[in-house]
Image 1 (cartoon, helix red, strand yellow):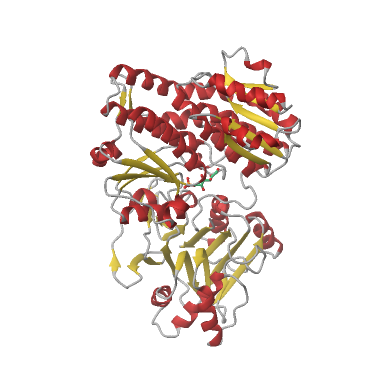
Image 2: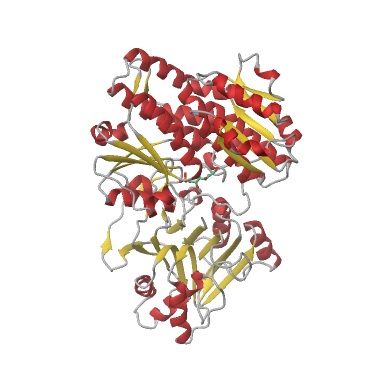
Length: 613
Ligand code: F6R
């Protein structure tokens, strides 16, 4: 959350920064701002609203008078202080010489503020960020240079930050620091960039350096110097960006979310590629090998994650327990961290995260590690913090996910969990014959997803019918309970309709009171071992005049008698079913949001990659 970009080089900084902000906008879109250093002066533009508002502001003002070649930009997801013009970043010091942008939360900002105000600083906003720039101003008085002043200031700060700092006194430098919020340096020819993620850099360079927590860097056009906050120099490795520009563009689709929904046959194929060993009925996962023995002998597996990734974790529990016969617990990362969980060295903790930067999941990782457990990442973003801090891990290879509502990462997470399950199950007694049947089913999933995507127009017509309702219930049982949870989350986050996911049989223990002729109920009801039980739950809804939309198999000829609308999905092996069955729910949420004129890719109050706790 919050997007950060900085440029220092020979080119005009402003267009590079505005373009980068547009790419980073999915990380926050409450306000945006830029600061350009032009020799002895600081030019700042900032505005509430999206980056397009900032672009108009700059255009209306006739543009900056300078052709500055150094600048920083920010797109905000508000924490402290409402999203208005004044609270937008950059913030500056009393003398308007130093400007700063920030992603994170300065937890001890009130005590720092009191001290700084007592020392004569005039702090104009209620943000935690402005306090930090005044603290740096104070440190500059007692330091040789800005680099040192920033390091000294950070020693007094509690909380999380990714910051960029510039000063008119040292107009050729950007100072950056990271603790808890990601920053990646882009290394170009006679230029350096720095951003919250590599998507804002790939237009300019494929060479990147990932900053670690506790590091501070001084960037000029021709050099970068990295130190710890405690002044020890660090040699950093330059790495290569693994994705292409085309992957982070809309490619003709109206929204990133729709593009990513349609990419799923390919993204799932990429998750399975080179790993599924159909002939041996097993999987090969190089990333898991260093810890395979520990996983196989684990007393239990704990899977921890947030949001959609948590739903994937729950789908993983069903398959791992059933097939690999290892006890699995699933925990919200935000809860795991703060309840002093009982974790032992013979436990294995899986962390699932698309971004690999989610603050709660990262905190859970560190907690589990501190308690001696083996920690394994299931992550999408290559080189992200969670991927780097785990003992071992399996990338899901879904490709960049830009839409704030997660879609292709979810199905790829479950695809990878299916591979892990197959591998562990084969080691723990599943026969080769059975393994081959499961592997063949997994291999067939991408083409089944292609089939489901053909129902998009039918699903759009259902969305038109229901676009004015205020509530939705999603019900599923067994491995499709997580599917129901995910369907409800997708609907509420992008269409703002209240939706709840429930295990179908739990409905009669409470939520059934909600059913009347105005309540649409989505049933995920494939022909599995508990099909008849779910059909009974459907009867209960129907008896109370609830309106049923069923996600049912193509060969289910009876379901039309119970459901008002049926969306057909191919049959899939029970435990892999959530991959295929969640596709129509993603499309339903998408079409509902479009029908209600909601901003699909940038839903209100949300941001991708939640880097604050
Ligand atoms: C929902 C969504 C969020 C994320 C959650 C975890 O569509 O995107 O619920 O799933 O914030 O994010 P990651 O997977 O990046 O850790």
